[in-house]
Structure formats: structure tokens, C-alpha cells
Image 1: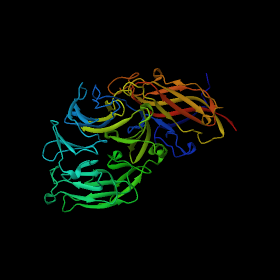
Image 2: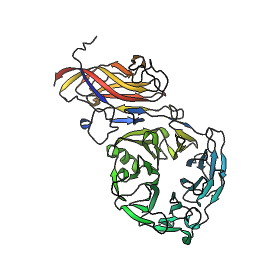
Image 3: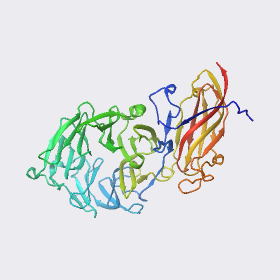
Image 4: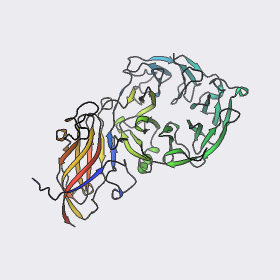
Length: 504
């Protein structure tokens, strides 16, 4: 048995997220050089993500081809709505059939929608870049907006009891708004009107009592409550939005994809003023890699996790290789991770009675899925990866003989992962010990409590795995690879214990 009497301990918490813009020498031990299908946990650490499963057991009917992607998914009236091909359908979650509620539509682009209530009755309006905007009530009867000025709208949003439309092909710089309380009334004498900006509109979003108009190269803000006092002022003429499907309200702000990565439109203490901020510098290489190659972008927000997800979809990329980025607001900082294995063509987040429902439509197979469900990607294994920076423990000139790694983690069930210890920047000439299976049988009870109401490994809530390790080097890094289908768990922190060797 090794003599542990002279062991040097170094401990660190898992925090800071994925860092790709700094040298491994400049990183903090708790940051991650790789973080794939782990998410920064608002409770601390890095948590292996949940999976997704079918929200409706049968495929959305195709119109002419099985390759037709889902163009819209939306939760409304206790049902789920989906558009595919030239039809719109509704189904009961978990049910076994889809009912057509609007068919024979001209082939359309991706849909946007708005849930609203002007008169005490819940409604949803959809636009698809081609057809007239269509209104559905909770009985799912369809009514088309009759005015030709908004036919083929790409964007729709309710603001101050008016319905706003934009993105018409003949008027790409114009916002048209309806009469108050009437999404299909366009008489200027009754309060309808239009506003023109000097750039092509890519998205509309209501935020903090204002309507933000996102354009290709500019952003505008509309204030006021009616035709008589609506005013539009520029937020910036220097930055625009790459794609309107990336705009979300997130963490008390608006987030969107700009030409240089993710940005926010942040409210300031100055009334009526805003400031712009770039937040994705730490992972900008992921955006640079995917901005030019992606065919489509999608995004969702998971509010109970203060989490934003953006997906880069390319038609020729297999689902298991499709990438995305997770952004989590922790305190006043943003932490990032990489997603892999989800290929959405449409998304929706809906909160009902405190339950967060996150949906996406399959790009290739016509199913509707619910995220944050289960421990696999509809039967496919979730491949999770974590890699620490290369750590020298403040002295790159002394060899460290590693003796033990102690992992602090929070389980939700049995852990199924491997620990790797790598030396000297993973040089092919350095020691490369075999994988150490993270063995839950080693877990010790710390507090005698339970996890999520079920005793786990003796009833502890913060278990430790004490893993003897081998090898030596001047720098050491840790890897955790998860290739199982066990329940998620959070990597909270590590303690590395080593003996000092010779100086080089």
C-alpha cells in the first residue's frame, strides 16, 4: 500500500462552465475544457442532462413525404399542435392519434405563433411566411385573417391589445398592427396602422412594456399604448439579429444571436434606455463553427433552470452529431456547455400550473418530443463528457505522483461513468492509465438523509467516491465520460491527492 503520509491535497468546485477562449494555463481548476451534455447546475456543479421522449406516441401525419420536417409545435388548450407539410394537427399529449384542424395550406416555411387573450377567450394565431395568418380558438376551429396586407407574414406578436405582423415579402421593413382587441381589423380610423423601419425585420418580441423590433443590422424599440402615441426609437444601428428563432426572454432580459455570438438587450437604471452586451465570448468558437454551416436555428428557455438552449441544425448532419449550446445564468454570470444529439426543427416552452413543458419537433422523423424527460434520447444513449483544465498546482516544474481522486457528486440514481486521469497535456508519451469506473459501492454516507425522497447508497445526499489512481506527470487533468442511460447526477467538485516528485 502506498505511503499516504506526505500526500498533498488540492480541492476545487466544478464551476465556471465551458471555456474555449483561454489557454489551459489561464483557466481555473473548476472550469471545463470540455463539457458536452452536462449543464451548469444552478445548484452548483455540472449536471448530466435529462433526455427526451415522445410527447405523442404516433408520428405527425405526412402530406406527401416522410422527410417532411415539423414546421411548428405548440402547446395550446390542453393539447399539442403540430404543422407538417400542408396541414396543421392537434393531439392529446401521450395520445395515439392526430386530428387535422387545417389542411390544404400552400407549402409554407417555418411557423411562428402567439398565444393571447383579447376578449376573455384564449386563442393562438400562427403565421408561416406564405399563407394568411390563421387564428384558432380552444375548440380548434380555424379562421384566416382576411386583410391581404398581412398575408405571408413571418412574425406575429400581441402588444397593447393590438396584433402586430411583420416579415411580409413585399414589405420586409414594415410592421402592421391591427385595431385594438381585433386581430383581423385594419381600419386606421379605429386604431390600426403601420410603422416602417430602415432595415429588414427578422423578429418581434415584447419585453418590459415595449415591443422590440429586431432587424438584420439594427434593433428598434416601440413604446406607447395606441396609434396616437406609438413611437419607435433605435436601440442600436450597429448590431442586428442573425435569426429571429433565437430571440427569447431569458433571466429578466432578451437574448438573441448576433453576428458575433449571443447578445442580450439589458435594461438599465436609466428609464427608457437599454444597453447591449455580448455574453458568449467563452464559447465563441462554437458559434463561429456553426454560424455559416447551419441551415436553421432553434432555441428554447427552461425557466426553472434559468437556462437557454440554442440549436444549430444542418439538414445533412445526423441527429447524434447535431450540436447546440446551453447557456445558464448563475448569479450575475453566464456559464456555457455544449449540446449534442438533439436535432429540432421547431420548439416551444410552456408553463402550466408550475409545470415546465419543453417540446421540440423531430427534423427528420415527424415525432413531437418532450425534453427534460427520461435518461436517454428517445432510446439513444446520452454521451456526456467533462474534462478539467491541465493543472500544475502552481508549479509546472515538479512531478506529481497521483495517489487518489475524491469525487463529490449528487446522485439521482446509480452513476454509470468512467474517470480518466491524464498527464502532461495528454501527450502520447505520457502515462495513460486505464479508465476507472466510478463505483457507487465506494460511496460513503455523509448526512444520513435521502435524495429526492429515496435513499441512495446508504441514504446520503452528498456522496463521495474515493478512487485510488496511478501515474505521474508535471500537469494532470481529469476526464469523466458518461455513456450510460442512468439518471442524471451532478459533478460537484474534486480533491486530488498526490506525492511530490523530482524537479525537472
